[in-house]
Image 1 (cartoon, rainbow, N blue to C red):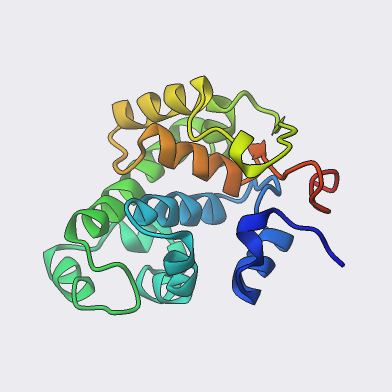
Image 2 (cartoon, rainbow, N blue to C red):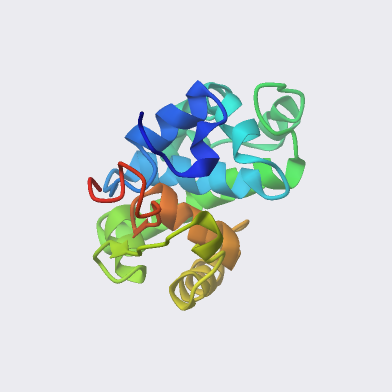
Length: 186
């Protein structure tokens, strides 16, 4: 029997995400931006809801192509607030567009979103060894510092808790519990 982090055992979609993606270091700008959007969209919702809508997000936001998203205007926001395939929160939609524009500026300045974000996270994955999910923190000094830096650049929906979840989802932090089969793999 495969032992996973307890949150990942509720259904196949959660298990697949846990087994193949969560905690795996990502250095792909498109994936990093996707996770920043998805984690920001989760605010106030469950991760299951967001995973269920992931393909809808990819379709609605041009597979997270920054240049395309950065051209979205008021009519796109209105169209997207009617799209049942995503979270239809106007502020989160507008934040995605604004965050794409800001990400392009970051890429121009740092060479990549990857270089900037991983630089804020310390450059190397942080490997924790929680005994249970109850031992996993919701925020850390690093996520608070990253949140502040992102906000100062104009990113939105990037509070410390959201940023910590982003860090977990992109492998900047490995919070797989020690009994999970992925703990030592990532």
